[in-house]
Amino acid sequence: MTDVAAFRPTGPNRYQPAEAATGSWDPKLLHGAALSALLAGRLQPETGTVARFAIDFLAPVPMTELTLDLIDDGGGSRVQRRRMVVSAGGRVVATASALIVREGDLDLPEKALNHPSPFPPDQVPSLTEPHPTAAGVVGWESFVTLGVAIELHKVPDDRRTHQWIGLTVPVVEGLEPLGIELVAAAADFAQSAVHRQLRFDDWSYRNADLTIHLARPVTGTWIGLRSEALVQPVGAGFNAADLFDAGGRVGRSASTLVVEPRSR
Image (cartoon, rainbow, N blue to C red; front, side, top):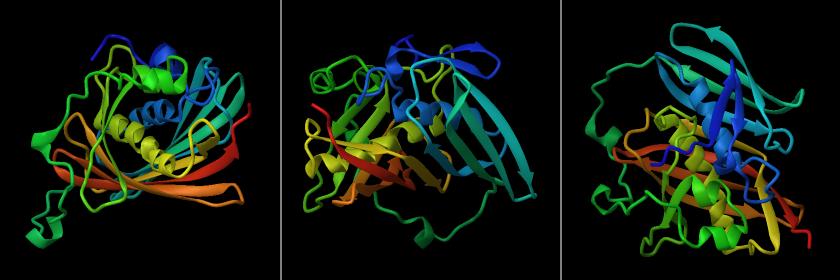
């Protein structure tokens, strides 16, 4: 992992996006995966487990300094909620929230823990460098070409899209990536399932939101993504993904897609 990061702190609750956070739809806009990772990490509590992380992309997020306002809603002894409002140039561009549950140590029966994974931990590919073809596909340096490594994984007799995903840069300068940041970034790439249905050169299918449900904290340095998608002529769609890590199945994500022809 390089010393280059997706974001640089510029003051209390303020962050400047770097080139490694650039979007793949427009070089003037932030990549959704980079923003998701930033917010998920800042919502991570000192105690408790993030059981749900959600983000709404309310407007295109420019590559300018971002201000993050944290709202602690509190809660009871078992469940609490934290929210975050993201502003750029005085305009609200995104909101996020984390639902936090009290962490326990339960003795669950084996059948409750039996969730087979299609991602064998002993077959993890090298995820230290972005895929060499990414730059040619996107057309400029971005989060996809600098910040994340993605490798396809073939699973016999399963038409869903399977990918190994790892971060190649820190999310925030000077800080080691957190598990919650990794899974928030990885889940954004469930839209890759749309690639089998719509050509990247001809169509845009941006995430309008992202919701991740987690059964436990993420372990390890990679995420296995098993995703599928549905798009329709009205211009909407969704993707959904099962999330795996070194410990097996860890969660599930879903996103709303805004589908449009790409401008020429």
